[in-house]
Length: 77
Image (cartoon, rainbow, N blue to C red; front, side, top):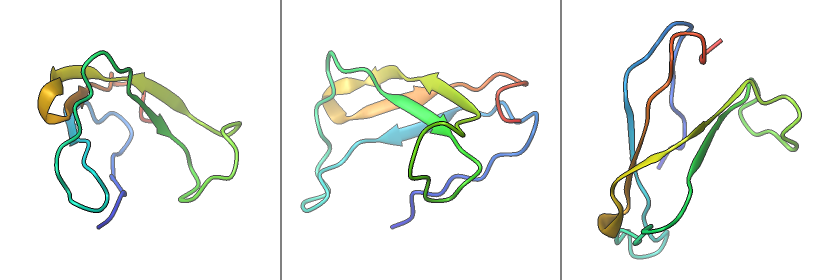
């Protein structure tokens, strides 16, 4: 399973994620949680000082672990 998402400068397509248990792959209830998506130029960053952007997710179907992130044109570089 890959955690990589490829976006390019100016991309604004919705990013939909489902949070799952790493062992059972069952969706995790994220009701009341806050999810953040960070964009970093490094594939495996050790610190967050190089983050280019941080987006807050919208809980689309929290009981089933689904959240969305909507980047704006300037967010991805």
